[in-house]
Image (cartoon, rainbow, N blue to C red; front, top):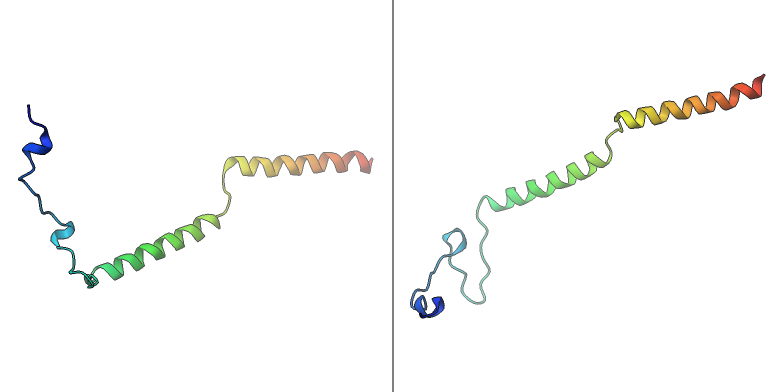
Length: 83
């Protein structure tokens, strides 16, 4: 049984990304009209989310309980000293 490569050797599939052939040697590819806004928006989204999510307030139940426990411990330490 012939190998798959040998059987399909005659079939050269010429499929390019976005149906655009590569540029000629020495030429650079021109950007489409949608690429610059898409890249800029993606970059700004990542920056805004990175800064915003790192600066968000701690509103979890564990954080609240930890703060209350620390307050109670401080009150218990102060109370025996005042008597």
